[in-house]
Length: 217
Length: 283
Image (cartoon, rainbow over all chains, first blue to last red; front, top):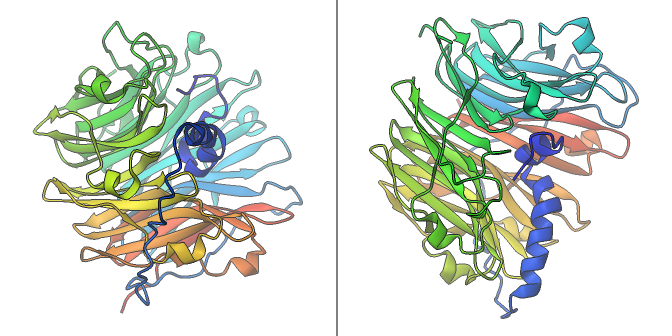
């Protein structure tokens, strides 16, 4: 199980691949040593329909991200689509070689806009790292997102931020999440919003917790 | 703290049985079918009861305690488990997936369903034993469009390879797991798995997973289910322009059967960056 102060938690939580390549790969390899190889034939399906009925466009990068020569540029961790052509996504981009900035990007009527730094972090916070990990949009232009920000002593705190009618508000620290006994790390791993302003989010403090909010529908 | 007018309330710690280790336990997945009616799941850290998976329900705005999945210990003889994903098709009707550990130490995928607010026992993926024996498997993601109608994805392996698979639940009955059509052609290095899934309506979902190309690099693929039929694995286009040598789609969301977006990152020799892939508009 992840530890509250394990900084890799948020990465492994979202990246099944990375997870596999580390702990799960290790577990799998141990398991594979233990089990007999029966020469099971490949069970991959060979039947391949000629085409998909759904047409995907080409991969695109996000406008408005800073340009620099750093190896890590940016990443997106979560997307939520409220209706056709109306989605929002969140992630982080590099500010410098050590710090990152949480950002969101909205698609409106099929057009993805520019990356927008999550509003509300103070200059002190902006000099450190902020990242959006989860997002949920119950209706077009109305989303909630959550993430973490790390402070100078390598402690990580969790924040939430709401978008109302297409405008992102300021990020706030989740009330009650800044715990003295947190041992250095809190993470937000999941969020679900059945309607605008009504969400629940979950994550980790020293013990399991849930955070919820109510607002007008 | 009161929860009104879109104001985030205070973080609540889930209560749970004292005999389980709570220190470091976390909610790994959560889903709300309606306002105030959600379910969450996670795993208790290693303790005297091993590492069992738990679920917790919110009913009409009040969170109940975290409880071990009913009769989970009978399945999780090896002791280690992970609840990976939970999705609620209707209030009090959710499904969750993850993996448990057999006595041999090998992990195996499980499904657990909630009906009318009561969680049943975890069970193996029907038909997966026929496909993969008692070898390694896991379910990593699930999405339910309505009560009893879900799709889940994961992977199984037999020692030589790891294969992404999907399994559908229709009207409360789980079907037979299937490997992703066409993926065998792409998965040159024989390592694939499902990462994320989103179902817009019954039988209409989008999903993404990862395979290993001939160079051993991880590449994401996209796959859609239309009217109950899963199409072939689709290679993400346009990566040449980014000079990407690997991709990692982490999240997908489908508003309708033909309208999805997926996001993640790509790796190129000199930089990594965020990437978005969206479906084309249907006319």
